[in-house]
Image 1 (tube, rainbow, N blue to C red):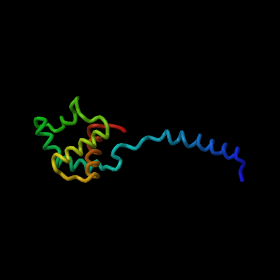
Image 2 (image 1 turned 90 degrees about the vertical axis):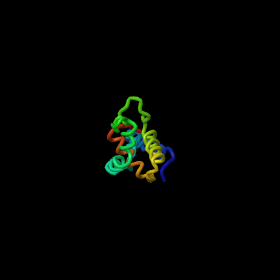
Image 3 (image 1 turned 180 degrees about the vertical axis):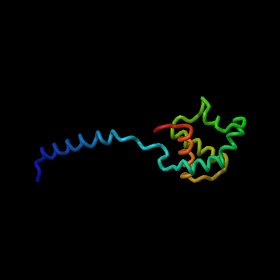
Image 4 (image 1 turned 90 degrees about the horizontal axis):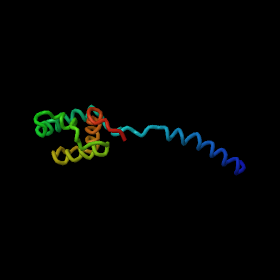
Length: 112
């Protein structure tokens, strides 16, 4: 059996090695479970026409305007959920994440 003092030294040394390594890891990418390719298909099918109507025919203006509402991953997912509800597209949560992954990769580039 290891003496208590030695055990504490081993424990402290282990923590000194593992804590900096864990702290150095990057946070997970937003929408890590989303597939941007699937999201692109869904967005093109269901989002573009609505955004084009709102932005005088240029749907991309919705994403590129200077006063956009989305500045965080949470806001982007919330906006996708809002649009899902308003349009009645009945996307499942994973489909919403696919769309958010696509929009983030293509336009927003928001990080966690």
